[in-house]
Image (cartoon, rainbow, N blue to C red; front, side):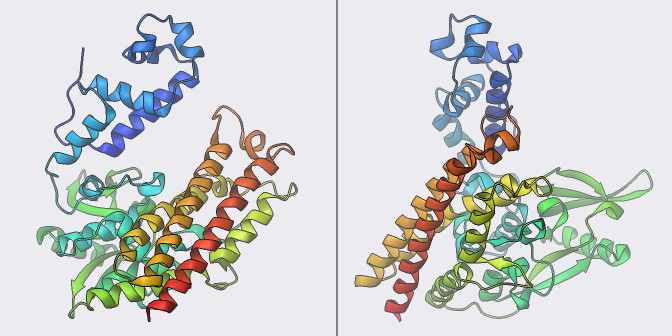
Length: 410
């Protein structure tokens, strides 16, 4: 028996269903067996045979597709993406509009929220283009025992363009300024939200890894905001928001010419990749090399900063997929040697992404083992460090080619 898709299905939620099904099979949970029998090779298998088999993520996605009445995962994706989004400025709409698959780190709500706000304001830009052209996908920050180096946001002064304000670059190029309300000032915050929601203007929030504030209400004596984020979405009390700020974009001047924005974005990509220390924290390639040195060091246990082996590092490394896609598109705007170099840079970043993807898998699998067993034992450290080193080598080559392409195009 097949199930019906929700009225407003989320591709990200469907992906999570497939991952949850795969995790259940790998952990020996018999409840997953009736679903997996939809696969031809398991149609006559016992529960024990199914649980003992090696099942791939692609097979789990096929099962999800079959569960909802589709012949394949591609058919399911096509159907979801062809449906009109319920809200043109929602994070879900941004995800569905992406022509390319969003990498795993696409859960990062801050860049998704800025893309949504820009689209709402009439700037057609997809997530991968934004992640790369903002410079974020080329950047990296690292300091052992300090996870704050990986934080992403628009907090602070957007015009200062530090690592935590990296997402302000493109809106400023398109002629927008930021309006802001601090969550520590509840009355001003409430007025700001009411005004913008009533006017249909997206509000970018940094609460729980970023997102949009989509609605407001007074409920059981409390003021609440509807948080449209990728982490723990739903209604939240105003006084429980993270102590940062919320923002909106305000058109204040003409946008820069498109070719000038591209030129600045490519120059900025090189700058972010080669960035020097920021407030005592290594950045760019130097940060990646520091990280590699610590990954290779058996004395570094990472017990206090396990995030460097999960979301914080994975999200930043997976961003290199955006670099590859954007650079292939940007190369078309060059001629001669510059185009050749930009294409080579794209290829190198794609190679870096594939090594980083293997590194992340090596650190994460199998899930029933601890981080120590997967990545910090004497036999595992060389394995994961080698994959990381290969990725950094490819990225270094890509950055060199990109710098040469920018120089030869001027």
